[in-house]
Amino acid sequence: MARKLLLALPAAAALLGGCVILPTYAPAAGEPVAIIQADRLPSPSFCADGVGYDAKVAKDGTIQVPANKRISLYSYVVRADYNVTYTCVPGASYTFEPGRRYVGAVQDVTGGCAIDLVQLSDTTDTGLAPEPSQSGPHCNPWAKPPKPKK
Image (cartoon, rainbow, N blue to C red):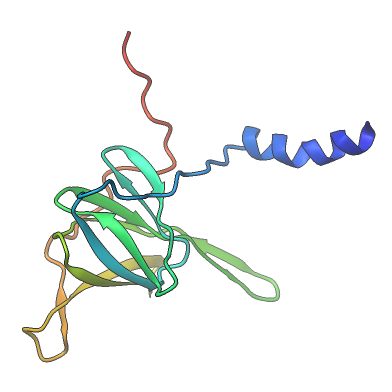
C-alpha cells in the first residue's frame, strides 16, 4: 500500500503543480498546412484558435502547422552547466501560407532567446526569405481554454 502511494505522489504533484499535457496536432483531411524544418526548435508547440498543441517532430525533423490563420509558435529550451540551469520559452506568431516550407531556429538574444523563422525561397540568392507575417505571440498553448457560457 505504501509503495502504491509513493508511486502516485509524483503523478499527483504533476497534476496539482500545473503541468499541462498538450494534445498532439494532427491536421484534418484536406486541411491546409505549412511545413517547418524544426530540428533547431527544441520541444516545439503552438497555439491555434486558442487551443494549444504539441507539434510532433517527424523523422525528417519537420513539423506541420495549420495555414491561413495566425499561429503562435513556441519552443522550450533548457541549457545546463555545472552550476547553472537556464530555461527560455520564446514565442512569436505567424500566418503561414499553405504548402510553403519554412526553417525555424531558436536564437540567443540579449536578455533571453527568440524564435527566428524564414521561408525557403527559390527567388533569393541564399534560398531563404524573411517571413513578413511575424508578430508577438497572441495566445498561450498552456492556458486553460475558457469555459463555455451556459
